Image 1 (spheres, helix red, strand yellow):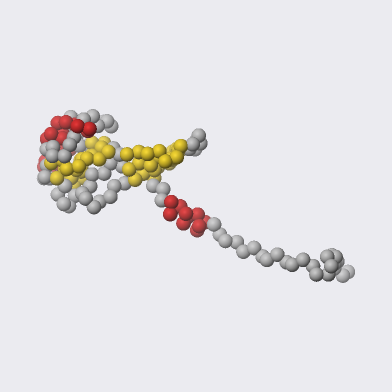
Image 2 (cartoon, helix red, strand yellow; image 1 turned 180 degrees about the vertical axis):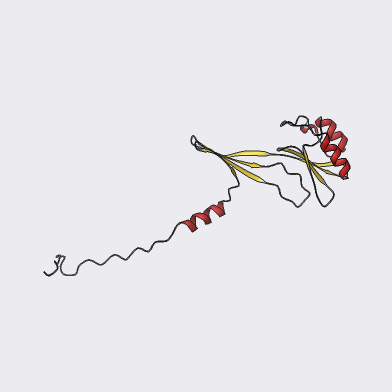
Length: 157
């Protein structure tokens, strides 16, 4: 995509969180058809070395453009992993429109009475962190019971 066309499309970008018209997009649409269907251009764009570009309409909706044609689209998918009265954990696969062979981003959101925490929880990293924080303590061996018939001895004065 030529920088001048990309700049023009970004100049047409409007603000807003919703992506009305996104469900009507399909592979093979031209850049102009995508912008017309969405009612605006992308909020931001990312160009890749293979000549393709990702157009993000908001944080949760994007399309992959190659040679001014839509080749793929993506939407953030959120799943609730755990829900309890005390806390809930949601796992989200963020919208990603990169060229084949590139990976998207996952994000977890933990809501507790103490606040909301966002990030990526890697179970292996958490396990390793716990192992490193717990110190193995040497417990002295238990002394064997007295062999003098069980009578306690008193120290000599």
